[in-house]
Structures are given as C-alpha cells and as structure tokens.
Amino acid sequence: MKTVGLAFLTQRRKGAKHYRVSMGFLCAFAPLREKYFFVTGLIFVLLSLTACNVRLPGQPTEAERWRAPADVSDFNQLYQENCAGCHGADGRRGAAQALNDSLYLSFVSDAALQQVIAEGRGGTNMPAFSQQAGGSLTDKQIELLITGIRSKWARPDEFKGQEIPSYSVNHQSPNSGEPIKGAAAYQTYCASCHGEQGTGGSAGSIVDPNFLTMVSDQGIRTTVVVGRADLGKPDWRSNLPGRPMSAQEIDDVVAWLISHRQLNGDR
Image (cartoon, rainbow, N blue to C red; front, top):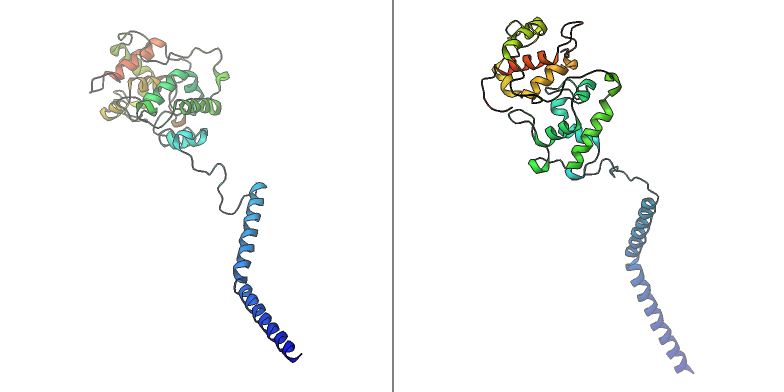
C-alpha cells in the first residue's frame, strides 16, 4: 500500500511539472497572441471603413489622385496646365490673345482652334500641343479644351444678325490688301492711339520689329478685327464711333502692317 501511494505522488508531481511547463510556454507567447488579435482587428476595421467609403486621414480625393498627362479629362486642369500661362488664368489679360472673349469665339471656327492648338503657330510663341507634333495632348484633350472654352466663355447670341469679317488672313488672293491704301486707312482708324507712323502714342508701337517678328499674319488680322477688349483695344466696329472698318479696309491695314516686317516667310 505504501508503495502504491509513493507511485501516485510521484506521478502527480510529474503531472504538476508538465502543467507548469505548459503554462510557462503559453505565457511566453501571450504577447504575440495579443499582437495577432490587435493586427487582425485593425485589418478588419480598415476593411470595414473602406467598404463604407470612409475617407481615411491623408487619403487623396479622386480629384487629387495622380493621373498620367494623357488621362486628364478635366477642362480646368487642362486649361491651367497648358493655356493659362499665356492666355491668362481666366482667359484674359495674358500676353496672348484673350480666349475669354465672346467676339473672338464668334470670329474663329472650331477647325481653326483645333489647328492652332494642335500644330501651333510657326515663328511665334504658340507651340504645338498635339502628340503627333511633339506635344503632350491627345486629340480628345484638344477637343475637350475647345468645347470647354466655348461652353465657358462663348456668347453667340450677342452677334446674331451681325456680319463678322472673315477669320483667315488667306481668305482672298495675296494681293487683296494694298499697303498704300492701308496707310491711309491706318490714319483714319488707328493713328489716334498708335501714333501717325505706328510707333506709339497712348498705345504701344505696332510697327516695332520685335513685335512684328513674334506675331503672325493671322495674329495681326485677329487683333485688327477683334481687338483686345481686356486691354482696352477696340474691335473693327469701334475704332471710329459710328464708322466700322470695311472688309477692304481691314485687308489693307493688315497688309500695311505686314509690310513693316523685316523678316520674310509665311507667318
């Protein structure tokens, strides 16, 4: 009987030792177990928030997400990144022709806008923007720019019933404008602001070689017809109150200005 009791106690001590070892093992891994449950819970919470469309701190909005240049389809972004530097942040008061000008937008066609945006204007500061010409814009983006400009700034109803002079400087034969007659028309319509010889008065010189080098023939015609309302330059109807310029007088003044250019070549 004594022998049996000793055997029982011995076995019990072994079991207790095993129990202590097992508990120690579990206690040693308790921190890892807690981290596991914490990480699992955190992942669950994040997935739940994502499923609920909750914006996390620091997460960019859809508009803030980076897009490849060719994927941009927002007019405002396209305009600010490609046009505002020269044409002005709101389409006015830039170094180049105002686009926020309802008369100009009635004067120029979509085809002409597409051509000048895509191909640029040789010899001037207007670069080519289409990918085919080495620029960064797709055909779709150029179309979006034209649609956006017209949607935002065009007011075609203002000019219903009015005959606006033709856009293209090449609309007639090369001899349609006569510089000698243009000099006379210039005195009538332009000299009061630009001086008798065009070298400057209350407004700047328009025969300055540097100016004429940077502006195209089309640019000169556009300015004569449309003016620059944002800078106080009247259009073809308002140079002389009650006496708009005729189509021939416009051609002649443009020819007179072009004749002052010292450089040759099609501009």
